[in-house]
Image (cartoon, rainbow, N blue to C red; front, side):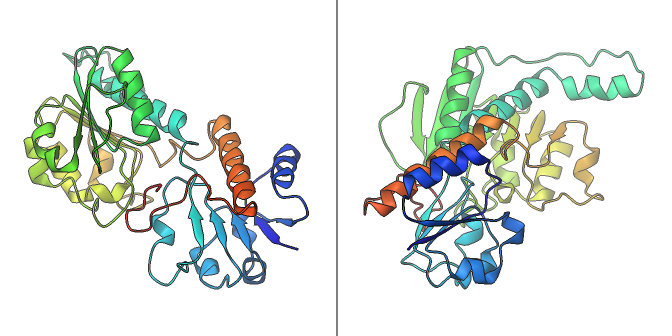
Length: 318
Protein backbone atom coordinates (compact mmCIF):
# COMPACT_ATOMS: atom_id res chain seq x y z
CA UNK A 1 0.00 0.00 0.00
CA UNK A 2 1.37 3.41 -1.00
CA UNK A 3 1.80 5.97 1.79
CA UNK A 4 0.76 9.53 1.06
CA UNK A 5 1.68 12.30 3.48
CA UNK A 6 -0.45 15.45 3.28
CA UNK A 7 1.05 18.47 5.05
CA UNK A 8 -1.71 20.96 4.25
CA UNK A 9 -4.47 22.40 6.46
CA UNK A 10 -7.14 20.33 4.72
CA UNK A 11 -10.77 20.01 5.69
CA UNK A 12 -12.95 16.94 5.19
CA UNK A 13 -13.98 17.86 1.65
CA UNK A 14 -10.32 18.20 0.66
CA UNK A 15 -9.51 14.81 2.14
CA UNK A 16 -12.33 13.27 0.15
CA UNK A 17 -11.03 14.83 -3.08
CA UNK A 18 -7.47 13.61 -2.49
CA UNK A 19 -8.52 10.13 -1.42
CA UNK A 20 -10.80 9.77 -4.43
CA UNK A 21 -7.74 10.44 -6.61
CA UNK A 22 -5.78 7.65 -4.90
CA UNK A 23 -8.07 4.76 -3.94
CA UNK A 24 -6.40 2.06 -1.88
CA UNK A 25 -3.63 4.32 -0.61
CA UNK A 26 -2.93 5.15 3.01
CA UNK A 27 -3.14 8.84 3.89
CA UNK A 28 -1.51 10.62 6.81
CA UNK A 29 -2.51 14.22 7.53
CA UNK A 30 -0.07 16.32 9.54
CA UNK A 31 0.58 20.09 9.64
CA UNK A 32 3.83 20.88 7.83
CA UNK A 33 5.53 22.17 10.97
CA UNK A 34 4.74 18.92 12.83
CA UNK A 35 5.94 16.41 10.23
CA UNK A 36 8.54 14.05 11.67
CA UNK A 37 11.56 12.54 9.93
CA UNK A 38 9.97 9.09 10.26
CA UNK A 39 6.74 10.23 8.56
CA UNK A 40 8.64 11.84 5.69
CA UNK A 41 10.88 8.79 5.29
CA UNK A 42 7.87 6.46 5.02
CA UNK A 43 6.02 8.43 2.33
CA UNK A 44 6.05 7.69 -1.40
CA UNK A 45 4.10 10.91 -2.03
CA UNK A 46 4.34 14.13 -0.03
CA UNK A 47 1.88 16.95 -0.61
CA UNK A 48 2.86 20.24 1.01
CA UNK A 49 6.00 22.24 1.67
CA UNK A 50 7.67 20.44 4.53
CA UNK A 51 11.17 21.26 5.76
CA UNK A 52 13.87 20.70 3.11
CA UNK A 53 15.90 18.88 5.77
CA UNK A 54 13.17 16.23 6.01
CA UNK A 55 13.04 15.81 2.24
CA UNK A 56 16.73 14.94 2.15
CA UNK A 57 16.00 11.85 4.26
CA UNK A 58 12.85 10.74 2.43
CA UNK A 59 14.25 7.65 0.73
CA UNK A 60 10.90 6.24 -0.44
CA UNK A 61 9.74 9.52 -1.94
CA UNK A 62 8.74 9.46 -5.61
CA UNK A 63 6.36 12.44 -5.96
CA UNK A 64 6.75 15.72 -4.10
CA UNK A 65 3.84 18.11 -4.67
CA UNK A 66 4.47 21.65 -3.46
CA UNK A 67 1.75 24.00 -2.29
CA UNK A 68 3.81 26.91 -3.66
CA UNK A 69 4.61 28.07 -7.17
CA UNK A 70 8.25 28.68 -6.24
CA UNK A 71 10.49 25.66 -5.75
CA UNK A 72 13.83 27.32 -5.01
CA UNK A 73 14.11 26.06 -1.41
CA UNK A 74 14.13 22.46 -2.68
CA UNK A 75 16.46 22.89 -5.65
CA UNK A 76 19.66 23.23 -3.67
CA UNK A 77 22.15 20.35 -4.00
CA UNK A 78 21.62 17.40 -1.68
CA UNK A 79 17.94 17.99 -0.93
CA UNK A 80 15.91 16.19 -3.58
CA UNK A 81 16.98 13.11 -5.51
CA UNK A 82 16.91 13.32 -9.28
CA UNK A 83 14.42 10.44 -9.57
CA UNK A 84 11.76 12.29 -7.54
CA UNK A 85 9.04 14.07 -9.51
CA UNK A 86 8.87 17.64 -8.22
CA UNK A 87 5.61 19.45 -8.92
CA UNK A 88 4.57 22.97 -8.00
CA UNK A 89 1.22 24.72 -7.68
CA UNK A 90 1.47 26.82 -10.82
CA UNK A 91 -1.95 28.29 -11.58
CA UNK A 92 -3.20 28.42 -8.01
CA UNK A 93 -1.91 31.89 -7.22
CA UNK A 94 -2.59 33.85 -10.40
CA UNK A 95 -5.71 35.69 -9.26
CA UNK A 96 -4.51 36.49 -5.74
CA UNK A 97 -1.00 37.69 -6.59
CA UNK A 98 -1.94 39.52 -9.80
CA UNK A 99 -4.72 41.45 -8.06
CA UNK A 100 -2.39 42.32 -5.17
CA UNK A 101 0.17 43.59 -7.66
CA UNK A 102 -2.40 45.62 -9.56
CA UNK A 103 -3.66 47.13 -6.30
CA UNK A 104 -0.09 48.14 -5.48
CA UNK A 105 0.35 49.61 -8.95
CA UNK A 106 -2.75 51.80 -8.77
CA UNK A 107 -2.09 52.82 -5.16
CA UNK A 108 1.40 54.02 -6.06
CA UNK A 109 0.27 55.78 -9.22
CA UNK A 110 -2.34 57.69 -7.21
CA UNK A 111 -0.01 58.21 -4.19
CA UNK A 112 -2.47 56.57 -1.83
CA UNK A 113 0.23 55.46 0.68
CA UNK A 114 1.21 59.11 1.11
CA UNK A 115 -2.38 60.08 1.84
CA UNK A 116 -2.68 57.21 4.31
CA UNK A 117 0.42 58.56 6.07
CA UNK A 118 -1.18 62.01 6.11
CA UNK A 119 -4.38 60.59 7.58
CA UNK A 120 -2.47 59.04 10.47
CA UNK A 121 -0.66 62.33 11.06
CA UNK A 122 -3.95 64.32 10.81
CA UNK A 123 -2.44 66.30 7.93
CA UNK A 124 -4.62 67.65 5.09
CA UNK A 125 -2.08 67.95 2.27
CA UNK A 126 -2.22 67.76 -1.50
CA UNK A 127 0.60 65.50 -2.75
CA UNK A 128 0.50 66.75 -6.33
CA UNK A 129 0.36 65.06 -9.70
CA UNK A 130 -0.46 61.42 -10.31
CA UNK A 131 -0.21 59.01 -13.23
CA UNK A 132 -2.68 56.64 -14.88
CA UNK A 133 -2.53 53.06 -16.01
CA UNK A 134 -4.72 53.94 -18.99
CA UNK A 135 -2.38 54.53 -21.96
CA UNK A 136 0.64 53.63 -19.80
CA UNK A 137 3.30 51.23 -21.05
CA UNK A 138 3.28 48.27 -18.67
CA UNK A 139 6.16 45.80 -18.77
CA UNK A 140 5.54 42.35 -17.29
CA UNK A 141 8.80 40.53 -16.53
CA UNK A 142 7.91 36.85 -16.17
CA UNK A 143 4.90 35.87 -18.25
CA UNK A 144 3.66 32.83 -16.36
CA UNK A 145 0.15 32.44 -14.96
CA UNK A 146 0.50 35.39 -12.56
CA UNK A 147 2.11 37.65 -15.14
CA UNK A 148 -0.52 36.79 -17.73
CA UNK A 149 -3.37 37.50 -15.29
CA UNK A 150 -1.83 40.88 -14.42
CA UNK A 151 -1.32 41.66 -18.11
CA UNK A 152 -4.98 40.88 -18.83
CA UNK A 153 -6.18 43.32 -16.16
CA UNK A 154 -3.72 46.06 -17.13
CA UNK A 155 -4.74 45.77 -20.78
CA UNK A 156 -8.43 45.92 -19.82
CA UNK A 157 -7.69 49.24 -18.06
CA UNK A 158 -6.18 50.67 -21.24
CA UNK A 159 -2.47 49.98 -20.87
CA UNK A 160 -0.15 48.91 -23.67
CA UNK A 161 1.37 45.71 -22.33
CA UNK A 162 4.87 44.50 -23.15
CA UNK A 163 6.10 41.22 -21.70
CA UNK A 164 9.33 39.32 -21.27
CA UNK A 165 9.70 35.55 -20.93
CA UNK A 166 12.61 33.14 -21.02
CA UNK A 167 11.83 31.42 -24.29
CA UNK A 168 10.26 32.74 -27.48
CA UNK A 169 6.74 31.62 -28.16
CA UNK A 170 3.38 32.65 -29.53
CA UNK A 171 2.16 35.99 -28.20
CA UNK A 172 -0.93 35.59 -25.99
CA UNK A 173 -3.88 37.92 -26.50
CA UNK A 174 -3.25 39.56 -23.11
CA UNK A 175 -0.02 41.08 -24.42
CA UNK A 176 0.66 43.64 -27.15
CA UNK A 177 4.33 42.78 -27.64
CA UNK A 178 6.30 39.75 -26.44
CA UNK A 179 10.08 39.58 -26.04
CA UNK A 180 12.79 37.42 -24.49
CA UNK A 181 15.12 38.43 -21.65
CA UNK A 182 17.86 39.71 -23.96
CA UNK A 183 15.61 42.72 -24.70
CA UNK A 184 15.05 43.61 -21.05
CA UNK A 185 17.28 46.70 -20.92
CA UNK A 186 15.67 48.42 -23.89
CA UNK A 187 12.18 47.61 -22.61
CA UNK A 188 12.87 49.00 -19.13
CA UNK A 189 13.51 52.38 -20.72
CA UNK A 190 10.04 52.38 -22.31
CA UNK A 191 7.95 51.28 -19.32
CA UNK A 192 5.79 53.44 -17.06
CA UNK A 193 5.14 50.36 -14.90
CA UNK A 194 7.46 47.38 -14.41
CA UNK A 195 5.87 44.32 -12.82
CA UNK A 196 8.38 41.61 -11.91
CA UNK A 197 7.14 38.12 -11.08
CA UNK A 198 10.28 36.03 -11.52
CA UNK A 199 11.17 32.88 -9.57
CA UNK A 200 14.28 32.71 -7.42
CA UNK A 201 17.03 31.17 -9.55
CA UNK A 202 20.72 31.91 -10.15
CA UNK A 203 19.73 33.60 -13.42
CA UNK A 204 17.33 36.03 -11.72
CA UNK A 205 19.37 36.82 -8.60
CA UNK A 206 20.12 40.57 -8.45
CA UNK A 207 18.72 40.98 -11.96
CA UNK A 208 17.62 44.54 -11.18
CA UNK A 209 20.92 46.32 -10.72
CA UNK A 210 21.34 50.02 -9.99
CA UNK A 211 22.28 50.45 -13.66
CA UNK A 212 19.00 48.86 -14.72
CA UNK A 213 17.04 51.23 -12.46
CA UNK A 214 18.95 54.05 -14.15
CA UNK A 215 17.52 52.86 -17.47
CA UNK A 216 13.95 53.22 -16.17
CA UNK A 217 11.87 56.35 -16.50
CA UNK A 218 12.12 58.73 -13.51
CA UNK A 219 8.33 58.58 -13.21
CA UNK A 220 8.10 54.78 -13.42
CA UNK A 221 6.58 52.46 -10.83
CA UNK A 222 8.31 49.16 -10.01
CA UNK A 223 6.33 46.30 -8.45
CA UNK A 224 7.89 43.00 -7.36
CA UNK A 225 5.75 40.02 -6.37
CA UNK A 226 8.13 37.32 -7.58
CA UNK A 227 11.20 36.74 -5.43
CA UNK A 228 13.03 39.32 -3.36
CA UNK A 229 16.38 38.00 -4.55
CA UNK A 230 15.78 39.73 -7.89
CA UNK A 231 16.89 43.04 -6.36
CA UNK A 232 19.40 43.65 -3.57
CA UNK A 233 18.05 45.65 -0.62
CA UNK A 234 20.70 48.35 -0.90
CA UNK A 235 20.09 48.69 -4.65
CA UNK A 236 16.35 49.19 -4.17
CA UNK A 237 17.00 51.69 -1.39
CA UNK A 238 19.47 53.69 -3.48
CA UNK A 239 17.30 53.67 -6.59
CA UNK A 240 14.33 55.05 -4.66
CA UNK A 241 16.31 57.51 -2.56
CA UNK A 242 18.11 58.82 -5.65
CA UNK A 243 14.84 59.29 -7.54
CA UNK A 244 15.68 56.91 -10.36
CA UNK A 245 12.04 55.83 -10.30
CA UNK A 246 8.95 57.44 -8.77
CA UNK A 247 7.90 54.60 -6.49
CA UNK A 248 8.03 50.89 -5.83
CA UNK A 249 5.81 48.26 -4.28
CA UNK A 250 7.27 45.00 -2.99
CA UNK A 251 5.60 41.96 -1.50
CA UNK A 252 8.99 40.24 -1.33
CA UNK A 253 12.41 41.35 -0.14
CA UNK A 254 15.87 39.86 -0.40
CA UNK A 255 15.89 39.24 3.35
CA UNK A 256 12.62 38.08 4.91
CA UNK A 257 11.41 39.24 7.31
CA UNK A 258 12.78 42.64 6.37
CA UNK A 259 14.96 43.73 9.34
CA UNK A 260 13.35 46.39 11.56
CA UNK A 261 16.38 48.66 11.10
CA UNK A 262 16.31 48.52 7.28
CA UNK A 263 16.24 52.01 5.72
CA UNK A 264 13.58 50.74 3.32
CA UNK A 265 10.91 51.14 6.02
CA UNK A 266 11.45 54.90 6.04
CA UNK A 267 11.04 55.55 2.32
CA UNK A 268 7.87 57.45 1.46
CA UNK A 269 7.87 56.16 -2.09
CA UNK A 270 8.01 52.48 -1.15
CA UNK A 271 4.99 50.31 -0.34
CA UNK A 272 5.88 47.09 1.51
CA UNK A 273 3.68 44.07 2.21
CA UNK A 274 5.16 41.06 4.07
CA UNK A 275 4.99 38.33 1.40
CA UNK A 276 1.22 37.99 1.72
CA UNK A 277 0.04 38.35 -1.89
CA UNK A 278 -0.23 34.59 -2.20
CA UNK A 279 -0.47 32.23 0.76
CA UNK A 280 -4.09 31.22 1.48
CA UNK A 281 -5.47 34.69 2.15
CA UNK A 282 -7.77 34.37 -0.84
CA UNK A 283 -9.72 31.17 -0.03
CA UNK A 284 -9.94 30.22 -3.71
CA UNK A 285 -6.14 29.83 -3.80
CA UNK A 286 -6.16 26.91 -1.38
CA UNK A 287 -8.99 25.22 -3.26
CA UNK A 288 -6.93 25.45 -6.42
CA UNK A 289 -3.86 24.01 -4.69
CA UNK A 290 -5.77 20.95 -3.50
CA UNK A 291 -7.31 20.46 -6.95
CA UNK A 292 -3.87 20.59 -8.59
CA UNK A 293 -2.50 18.13 -6.02
CA UNK A 294 -5.40 15.72 -6.57
CA UNK A 295 -4.99 15.81 -10.35
CA UNK A 296 -1.23 15.29 -10.21
CA UNK A 297 -1.64 12.48 -7.68
CA UNK A 298 -4.11 10.66 -9.92
CA UNK A 299 -1.86 11.05 -12.96
CA UNK A 300 1.16 9.78 -11.05
CA UNK A 301 -0.68 6.68 -9.84
CA UNK A 302 -1.87 6.00 -13.39
CA UNK A 303 1.73 6.11 -14.59
CA UNK A 304 1.18 9.36 -16.44
CA UNK A 305 3.11 12.61 -16.21
CA UNK A 306 1.76 15.19 -13.74
CA UNK A 307 0.86 18.58 -15.18
CA UNK A 308 3.07 20.88 -13.12
CA UNK A 309 6.50 19.23 -13.08
CA UNK A 310 9.28 21.69 -12.24
CA UNK A 311 12.32 22.02 -14.50
CA UNK A 312 15.08 21.90 -11.90
CA UNK A 313 17.51 23.85 -14.05
CA UNK A 314 15.25 26.89 -14.28
CA UNK A 315 12.88 26.63 -11.31
CA UNK A 316 9.90 27.05 -13.66
CA UNK A 317 7.15 24.63 -14.54
CA UNK A 318 8.39 22.46 -17.37
